[in-house]
Length: 310
Ligand code: AMP
Ligand code: MG
Image 1: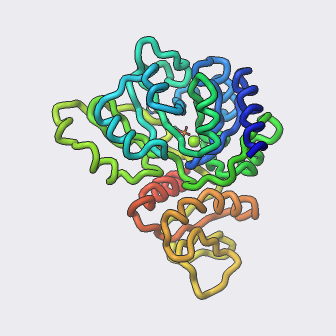
Image 2: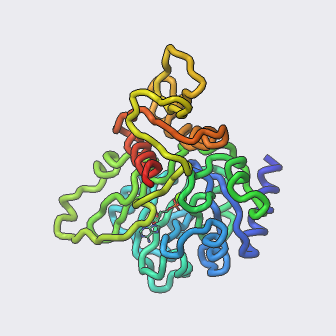
């Protein structure tokens, strides 16, 4: 406990100096900096090698903090009450007097926000008086980190501090929903899309226009292990790593289980770890068996589809 408190103190010192640090969240580890500071957020883009047109999510402690920067509506309140803190991000309209750095919004008047539930990061957010911009703590287009070691593997000594909060419980990024105009999901993730649509009635919004937002994270190559990925594979070829979600009787050194009994939450949690392990073991190709497209399986399929893009 004491160790956590002193680590949080250290984290705050770095953040107050406009440095970026890694923070644990229930989805994946984030590369965090003061979302009100152009200097801090520029450092995030530089370290991650992230294109400047790909906006960042701002992480808040509470709805009261958020209200200083963003407009909220009934849909937001319903979703907030049900799922926050948790793995859901909202794209909202910025208030004119918002202090959020224009760099993280790509100069637009909207911003993506989230309330992470990891207890250490909540403690940290409670103690600072600014939100944290925090994209996943990996080099752009690669696999998101779910442990301190993953972050070390990504940045080495270039990153001065990692707040260690164990391994991420969910292991996949947040669901992102756009709440400007007619609500719609921009990226599948930790909260199932059906649960979200159950709460917000699309009929209420039938006169509203769907405002199209460009989301770089939802297109082309992303979440990539850097080697070819083959989907819906019934078998693996020689020397091809084979990711499975159900235990086989046959023992094969190239089999990598992300779950033994098709448990999709377990599979989500183990996916990125397994992709990293396969890469570290020197494989040149990956095959993945068909993943049921239900619950968090939707988000798993979204990520592996993108990982398979060239
Ligand atoms: P990451 O931080 O790597 O999990 O990615 C965050 C995702 O949120 C990116 O794909 C962004 O494009 C998306 N995003 C962040 N801010 C906005 C915004 N203002 N409007 C639309 N999408 C956003
Ligand atoms: Mg990312």
